[in-house]
Amino acid sequence: MSTVKALIIVAVKKQWPLFQLDVNNAFLHGDLDEEVFMKLPSSLVVDPPPSTSVPLVCRLQKSLYGLRQASRQWYAKLSQALCSRGYSSSLNDYSLFTKGSGDSLVLLVVYVDDIILTGTDLAEISALKYSFHSQFKIKYLGSLHYFLGIEVLYTPQGVLLHQKKFIHDLLVQFNSSDCSPVMCPLELHEKFLTDMGELFPNPEEYKCLVGNLNFLTHTRPDLCFVVQHLSQFMQKPCIPHMKSALHLLRYLKGTSDVGVFFNNSPDFSLDVYCDSDWGACPSSRKSVTGFCVLLGRSLVRWKSKKQPVVSLSSAEAEYRSMSKAVAELSWLESCLHERTKHIELDCHFVRNKLSEGLIDLSHTASASQFADMFTKPIVGVVHHLHLRKLGVVSPSNLRGAIRIHTKGIT
Image (cartoon, rainbow, N blue to C red; front, side, top):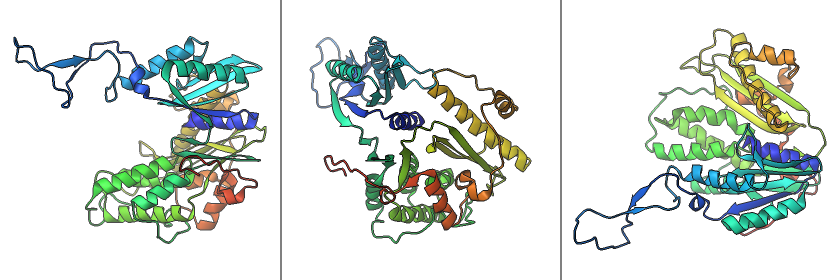
């Protein structure tokens, strides 16, 4: 998803059109490199030869949904078709393909069977769509408007990605459509333990809700810290954990149309904010890492994650947080400039990147530290102020928003 968002940001800033394709029955196109047999479907009745009583099986000639090889074989088929047309995959993300240079450039990113196309060469894009249709039977969906449950809203200032429909369906699913909204995703100073209170009687419901909330973090950075917090209790959720998850639904009720905004200014500068909360976990005393990356003042990547080891000091926790942020920055810089950089694994990774000139470290006051929301709950006014500065807004904050209507989707 980081690659998808980076591609959209570049296209918006370069004023390139964004197109969307969907491949019909993608996994059925893969060719099998090995012998695979399957039992006959129960609905298919075949009389066995009279000479044997051994049940019959089928030998597959093509890939099939449900096979472990299916996704790999589909990618092999797709990449072969693209490479035959002169496309090459990025070494930083194999789902990103490019062709051409200078005035003629086409970029393509694939997520299973959904494809986003953009670039400067409209003739090549049209030819590629025709080639795809002849090989795979695609559905051309026009301009990018609804991708992986993410809605795209075009405005004169840029593009807003949001998941309003997904949130609406989620509220209905968990009987929260009529709940009263709240200001913050998590109560201030609220801490969770593994065993706190009575076990929730339906852990599958909790897993389903947290899984859906995790999907929402693709366009809602304000949910990251809470969701990573709640995800730690998937095996044995307690009633207080479920209450906090439902509290998050109340927050979503009042912010359902909020999304991340990508501006169309020509700025391509990279800014990174990182922070840590030392010893934040009351059970393990592990710290929490939080960072966000902005490309041309558009939020492209964010993360909230518990550190894997216990840091012995706040400085060590901050250093580990910076290491994760700089690794992300190094990957993004490599992806944008189509070259690879070795990411060192030693303790001086941040210092090396600082000496190379890739990063510049500076102290950030709490009022301007966007990464705070990825490490701890913050008060409502500051929380919403940070969201506006990060470009996480609702359509009412934007002038001239254009809504695209499709089948059952607004």
